[in-house]
Image (cartoon, rainbow, N blue to C red; front, top):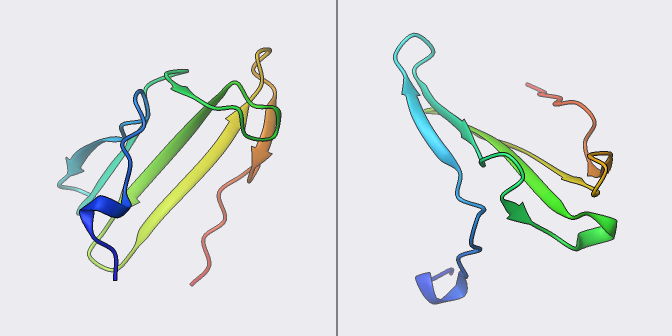
Length: 80
């Protein structure tokens, strides 16, 4: 079981969510280029998140200093 002490806040990587009444979900992302990363050649990472009644979808990607994607899915695929 996870507890709050199992987590570490990463500065600049906050995902800002807003409610969509039409879609009935929360959706949001990190701010542009604020989530610094050194994973697999990246200099920053992005996350786009959707939280609905039935699911959580997260699309995470890493980019190098020239804004070239170096890790993560190239497109979001949702399977049902």
